[in-house]
Length: 404
Image 1 (cartoon, rainbow, N blue to C red):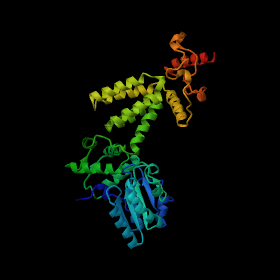
Image 2: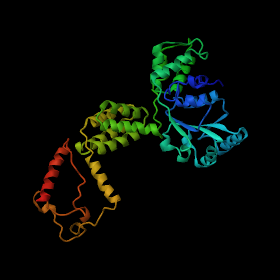
Image 3: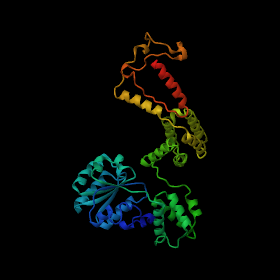
Image 4: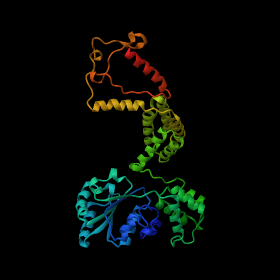
């Protein structure tokens, strides 16, 4: 079977790698390593399709080193042992390992001593943040290099390289169609190559337009990785945008989760935001959100985006207060720190001496509720915003009555 276009166009030396100018070029670290014929164990991390494998293979080909490629997920302990035996035979080998964050403990135990001795030089690749996902023992023996997102200009450079190559003879495509591919590929050069290749072979005339591209692939590619770092970046972007009252960014990140059809994650995070970031400034947001969730579930996708959009706008533009969240965390931290104390006698079960507030004017009577060691503790500090302004008036009045 013929290789896909992305593999045919894979760079054979560093100067052919697209993007990553912070690592490649005159005076840059990876270029200098290749120039000096030296390689150290390293981990390359970044989004899919931005050149991790291409970069690793380009370095190896330019250096002329012996290498083997494994995937931490699909290759077995036996496969790793075979590579180690080859390394002993050749007095050293470069191991290119994809999805390095999936390497289990058994394989790590086999690999570590050979990394330590220098018999194996590892180039690991991952879409996950290595500081969070890779075993510290592996990480400490490697240099970490983050690969940056490719720009649309970078994607266009790759596409222009493809159409001028020998692999798509007779292709005709205008700049608007190329720009459209670059736009919907979302930093993923491999995706852009694949889309161009499908469009080429799906056309009888080899003439490709933006309409052809839209017909083949009308849903943008974006990196979320539901079980990994990208997914939580999107959720973090959503929460911080709503917290920051940026309605446009809030809609953007919510739309990404809707496009991924991940309503569960979206609804869970919105529920957190309602009480953590909006809180007492607008207590009605909780019931409003619950109504929007129920409406979304009732109508299903794609119409669910309509009530979702409405509640996102309301949440982003709502007044914000984190006072309840902060107050609860402070009280909870006291418990964790052992600052507890006994419940005051008058308010224990069936205690004598309890003053029943409803028997007093305003349903308030001065008495001690906190344990002795915490009796002067104040967890809650109201803000003068939204509905909470009303609570602040009541709070201040009660505090004054306690002093009298």
